[in-house]
Length: 544
Image (cartoon, rainbow, N blue to C red; front, side, top):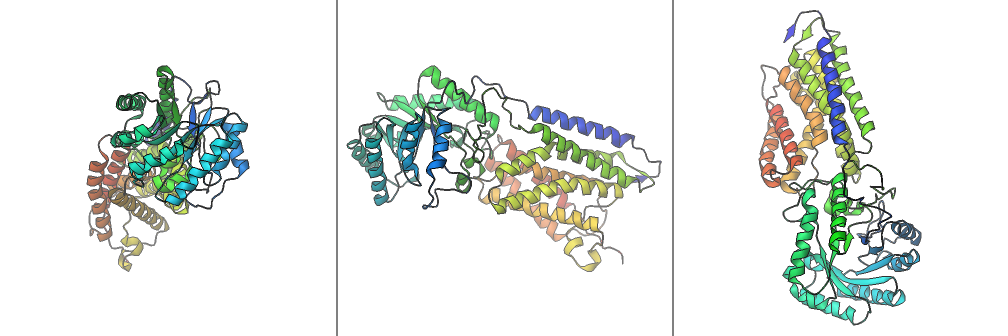
């Protein structure tokens, strides 16, 4: 493997320059802003209406005793009045019965929701409260929504729902409607006679056959017209539509900042041209929804949850990576460090490695440099709860450490350690600190990677694809195995088991997620590469 020639840094320096240029080019492309027909949020052209839930941080309606303060909601109403004419609520629990009063003070209208479920007592309490609110704030509450997706959840029959709607209609003087996914309106046409107007939810991302962002507005218009044909002579309100700014892909539907801005912009432009009303979901990101729907559930808002900042201020370029210069700089620094480790290691060797060794180091440095910012971004958006932070934080740490240690091992002529060198019998154990650290990095990657692969097999719907951090960790392992693989030794059982799980999982994941999901295809490719790398491992006894 080694040639006894004078050390030359011409090759690594050339590859370093190529790596740095590749990282800059990649981030220039990743950060390219999107061009839109209209600004998604424009104070000069306010939204017709937007769904409102007040929960911040650890607040959640899943805990019935949660009460949101008047001050917190007043702040929200003041902010929303600058960008919208109206807010839609879904219940009067958790302090939300204060919304009509607070909204009226800042000139907002309210589409007031009544939350219906399987408990008749709770339903009657919701109805009684809302009826009183309509009497107390007649100039604020413009309509009442009796039930939200209760048919979809299967918590009430259509006949009982119609009876509740008619009961509310007899007690209020504002229009009354029911809101559900468009398909459930078509399946339960008897609800049509009970309401004053139709409120349908069209969420292209959540369709059974997900719609790409570029086709989302056309899909919304197509469904709206289809429902209008089925239910003539009544207004069709789009009660929920929008797009998530973060989360996992479903088929070709990619959550991202630019896609959210594009979809919202195009739907609002369409609504203005064809003169129909739209309520966007939603005003604020809702972290608590991530417990129910994964990462994607928490990022439908037009305003971020924590700092209450507009995601898309008017006049500011919209990009998926607003901090791209910092992310690019960190990536350039990591790439330089990887090459520096390799060259410093080489100084202790009186020979030059083959070109393939430097190429593997360059590939590792470049992939890590490009993906560090992406992986860090995903860590922030996808980590909710200490357990998730620990898992994805450990994988990202492995992704940073792996190229550095593998560069050292490649230039030192060492092979990828096996688990036997960490935990096996004494003849296989190593005394090298660097080898132990590399082995631990490999073990962390194998455990998290295998857990993720099995998750995509048994519980995939809300699971995020860890393609960025996993690639950062696995590519250096594969490169080291390629150039410094032991020619003799036994195949370790642990590596073989991990390899089998990864490869078999890839078959199912690829079939289940489909060919349009590039996040899935990328993740499957890395699972497969990792599986092959582990399968090729050989354990060699270390001489006394």
